[in-house]
Amino acid sequence: MTTAQAVETFDSLNPATDEVLGTYPVHTAEQVEAAVAKARGAALWWNTLGFSGRAERLARWRGSMARRMGELCDVVSKETGKPAGDAQLEIVLAIEHLAWAAKNARKVLGSQRRAPGLLLSNQAATVEYQPLGVVGVIGPWNYPVYTPLGSVSYALAAGNTVVFKPSEYTPGVGKWLVDTFAEAVPEHPVLQLVTGFGATGAALANSGVDKIAFTGSAATGKKVMAAAAETLTPVVIEAGGKDPLIVDADADLEAAADATVWGAFSNAGQTCAGVERVYVHERVYDEFVAKVVDKAKKVDAGTHYGPMTMPSQLDVVRRHIADALARGGRALVGGKDAVGDRFVKPTVLVDVPEDSAAVREETFGPTVTIAKVRDMDEAIEKANDSVYGLGSTVFSKRRGLELARRLRTGQTAINAPLSFAGIASLPFGGLGDSGFGRIHGPEGLREFARPKAIARQRFTAPIALTTFARSAKTEALVGKLIGRLHGRR
Image (cartoon, rainbow, N blue to C red; front, side, top):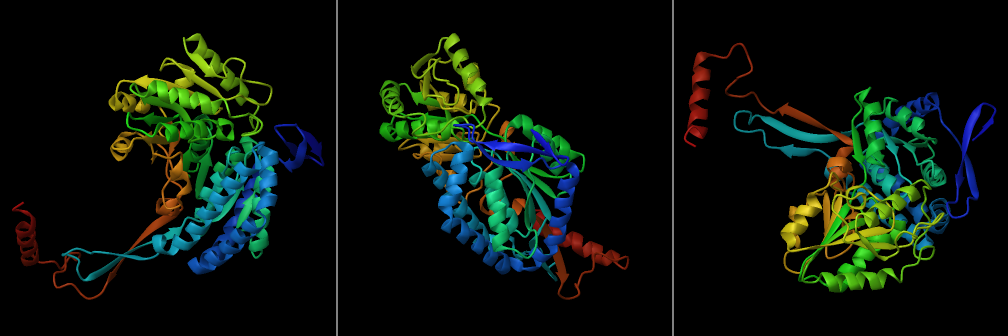
């Protein structure tokens, strides 16, 4: 921390080297409120552009991101430590989502006819979705482009202005995104940046924005909700998970093992919907574990993924591994010496009790537990026995869809890892301690809009019900009509 002219600042560091990448202000509550006021002033202009006007400007921004992808990859890689290829993957997905939101906003949110019903057949009924106004987005550090843009893109396409607070670990990524947006849309402060720590996020939640979109831990999500509750501000929360992968007896074991290793270790395991628990049919357990171990031994920390972005997470991973081993678990890859000063080696754990920390709590590191089950009923039961409910994966040739429907999660991938995250038309979100509400897809657009119902009388009704001039004859006629229509059922 430094103080210069009474302005508190903080440094962004490269987690692999501790190199100072930039210095950013810790925005105060007053500064956050000023940003929200500016966004409120810009909201009318942004809304009056209409769907086509906003789509055109979002296309400019998208084009800039695509042309300058290498530049953004460099910023992401330096602030998170992830390899450039992984940075590029999240940027590509973010661009695809931005394109989908801009293209489909009119179709999803535009005026839609509704049937008025027999008694009010003289009415024309429509529903349209109007922007909320100003949306506050609090983003995470693990996917600092893809994840916050899952809210920012859809909120902007729906007609809202946005005040964005990136994680204190990735403020440079947030600044890059906001600066390039301002170049594409210079007229008004439609997308603004505020930086800082938890107090800045709390100030945003309590600033009078019309909705908060938060991604982070369940504990922090509860604090955001508490702050937002003071002003009855609605929230959409994605708060992590303990995602299971289940392997049926007829699964393609090679593909399932590859998905397990990628889902567990990519991005150093710092993925909210990453694979943390695996339940395998006893008939294929040994063969599956052997394949996972073989593949995991070829994954190199520092080459295939980067360091732990948040240093404190090292202690969590260390504690989970130690607890698993102390409770009778075995490390087939990695283990008690896997956690270093910055990097964590891939760790595959078996024979871990279901009530251990490594199974119950979100690890958010490159570890995975694998358990043997007698059948898929036991696999489903154990997979669902969690306070979390974000994502899940099924490998089965015959029963994939059936098993997916039985998993208590917001989304499930069948025979592929995390595929739901890349499909822009699918909603993304969880239940339980994983949060609520949805981003992405039509549901994501509607999350940032309010439904407006409109009834318009086309002609005077032959039977007038909403008047003091209503006669006893009219009441008898209506009663008889409803009796004939519904009374015989």
